[in-house]
Image (cartoon, rainbow, N blue to C red):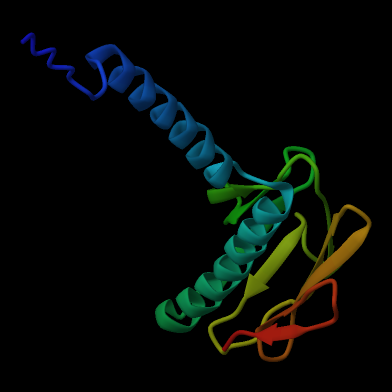
Length: 155
């Protein structure tokens, strides 16, 4: 009597091929998840801009000195002071306009130690929709209005 023992299972080569396919699928999926979309960039820019306004207002209140947030439309940068410290770059696919006090020498908004500001409005246009960040001149409070008309005020 002859006994033929037949082993079942996968060869090492088959297992390696399956692992390669799974790792390629994982790599493609994770890169697609973390890819920056224009809407995510716009949201991140809006949050950075709002945060910059809040930081400048808080710094003016704490230090007792006026703080200036400047806008360079040519280089598409918004930052603290004349030298644009901590500048945030406007994404290429967006258009930003700033309406500001006419007595300022450079486009921007000044926050005063008493809580007020020179006021101004950033209009951010992307894909046909416009969002607005308004800085109140009396209280220096920033209010965000998105494309749907929803508002969010910062204290």
